[in-house]
Image (cartoon, rainbow over all chains, first blue to last red; front, side, top):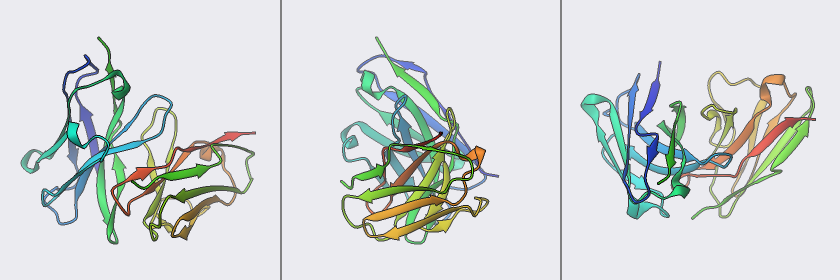
Length: 122
Length: 106
């Protein structure tokens, strides 16, 4: 059974850096093709992909947020960490981590965490 | 960036109806398209990948079609559990979601 769970602060102040940790089980990030991504969803709005890291440490960032994002992994702990700098109230959202599984030549998010709501406020 | 546009934004339907949701990509994405279902307060659930492949455990009343820039998700006979918001997502170049289609009770 695959599970993922996000952890981090529920409230951050503007200009601070958000650090979120995704702890997962049921798969290994050392297996060829495996990846973990981060997706966020502001209240009442659509999903927005943020970042993804693969088993081989290749990673991708949303072009619109690339300068503010860092994604890293700790394979031994089954964890992936996302950092988003210079937080603003528009970054208030539920942040999800999800497993990225290779289906053919592309990766889709086939298992998701429950999400964690982050509010940005002074 | 590849933009994904879904229509309609909201769809009112009854149990037993056949429902079709359309997703258009701003440039050709082959068949690198997935569909997700999301219920209020819950994480999205993968329904379909590679435009028409049904994820394991997803009921066969869900089907997907299309390639290039135009795709559809069809629910052949709407069940009470299907009232939710549906998102398409391209994975040809990075990952981009559509704005969502809410399927509500008529």
